[in-house]
Image (cartoon, rainbow, N blue to C red):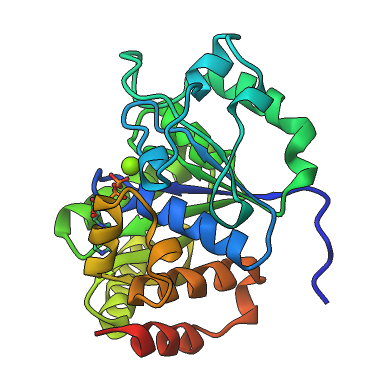
Length: 269
Ligand SMILES: Nc1ncnc2c1ncn2[C@@H]1O[C@H](COP(=O)(O)OP(=O)(O)O)[C@@H](O)[C@H]1O
Ligand SMILES: [Mg+2]
C-alpha cells in the first residue's frame, strides 16, 4: 500500500527551450491529476510569459505578482479550475526577469507552506531558463520534470538544464517526458539517446515518465483557450496526459514503461 504523504508532492516542469510544451504539460498534467481525484494545485511561476491562465480560460484580477507585492492575499488569488483544480495565476511581463527571485520564491513558499497539507500534488510551471533563480525553483521541487522534444535544440537545452541543476544543486533524479513525438517508439528512442549522453558525462538518474504525441487537438484547445484534457478527453494527447498523471502518481517502479507505451500508442493516430 502506498503510504499517505503528509504534504503535497511538488513537481516542477522545466525545459531549456521555450516552446517545448512546459505550459501545456503543466496545465494538462495538473488537470489530469485533478480528474483522477487528486487534490491538485497548479502554480504559474513563469514571470515572463504567464500562459497557464489562458490555457485554462481563467482570466484573473490578481496574479502572483500582486501576492508578492502584498496587494492581495492567497485566498484572493486562488482560483478553482477544471475538475476542482486549484490555480495560482502567474504574472506576465514584470520586466524584472522571467522567473521569481530568491526573495520572491521564499515569500511564495512561506505563503504556501500552511496549505501544502491540503494537496496531493502541486505542479509548477517554472517558465524554464538557465538563470540561477529559475534553476533554484526547479531544484526545490520533489520531482523535476523535464520536457524534451525531438528538436535538436530541445535536446541540447534539456541537457544544459539537467547539467546545471546537477552541478549547482546536486539534483540527480529527473523525470523526463517526451513531448510532440510521433509515437511511443520514437519517444523511447529519444529518451534512450538523451539518457545515454547524459549518463556519459553526468552522474544523474533519468526516469522515463512518458510521452505526449504531437496532436492537433492540443493546438485546437489552445486556440479555444481551454486545456485539451478538459475539452477533448478522448484525444491522443489527453489519454497520454492521463497516463502521465498515473505514472507520476505511483512510485517509480510501480508501473512498467511498456504499459505507458501501450496507452500512448493506443491513442495515437
Ligand atoms: N503535444 C503537442 N501537440 C501539438 N502541439 C503542441 C503539443 N505541445 C505543445 N504544443 C504546441 O506548442 C506550443 C508551445 O507550447 P507551450 O506549452 O506554450 O510551451 P512552453 O511553455 O514550453 O513555452 C503551443 O502553442 C502548443 O500549441
Ligand atoms: Mg510556457
